[in-house]
Image 1 (tube, rainbow, N blue to C red):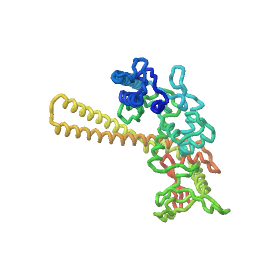
Image 2 (cartoon, rainbow, N blue to C red):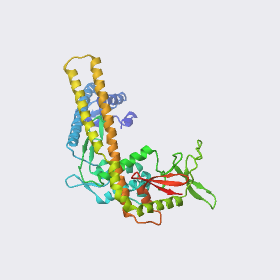
Image 3 (cartoon, rainbow, N blue to C red):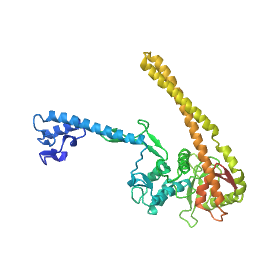
Image 4 (cartoon, helix red, strand yellow):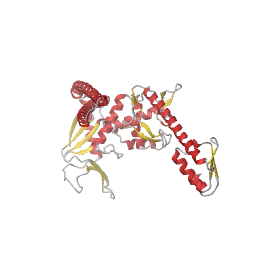
Length: 440
């Protein structure tokens, strides 16, 4: 509209009020002056102002300032109300774009069982070793509606579902905040404002254990640097036992009747070739080795189950770590109080900047050290807990499986973390941390 006016398509703009014309005083005055230079007037009905009048600009300046402050006040009141709801633990969801939940009669989230099946399917497929992109392709191919109601699933949507704590029945509130009430720019909350974590705020779709397993698997994939992008269940699972390189798929004899796909170490024939002696493998060889390994597990499952719990207790015991965590939390609280008292002491009496800074830096450094130790202990507790869950899932899978004659892709994904290839053997590293060797 402003551009059309400046091009001479009309000579007057009618506006309901100053507050509807621009976000702030500067924008109002700048635009009005541009229009005035072209002989175009703006009439504000509510305030009865004509910008072509000699007194118009002064009145516009005053009214625009008042409108800007009114906008600020409304924004601050709205923000206060939102944060008060957050502090009270009141959970809201964008139900029309949130898979798995509907708005109940009382406004609270209720599980949409049909959509919840899709959510549980995503978690199961991911924990069974499927890549995020492969899950997205599967849902798209089978016509499953996405959270936005479209047919095409994106990898980012799958990752968002896997990392959203609301699916375990909890809610992290104030994930983002408005930086500027004028521009309405939103920013991810990285500690600038207080956030609130509400446990058990609504019905869960997946258990807390499954959710933690998914977070552990996401971290493991990121830290390992192994991208799982192929459609094959073996992609990024095969590791060279000599150089540590990942096996990739290659096609031999692509233009002949002897065409076949094989797997070999990606470092073997690169520019920095290690010339490792690990062999190439076909799908059939990997499948046969897995069948042999799994049947050996099933044959000895009663014996394995007998000592599994004792072994798990030793490997995943967190009693000492929990005590250490509690001690570090008390120490952090104590140092934090000392830091607060020192700041208040500086406010009560005059002291040199050097004395204040030296003590502040000492306490701040001590607090950061304690927090660092606390983070490491917490991570180790989580690692051991998720390892126990992984081990229990492996044992349950083995208990329920019978001897198999043919390769089962779902069993492979559920049980196997990596397959370490040596010239004379293949070592199956299972998700419970144990290893099983099959000779070649």
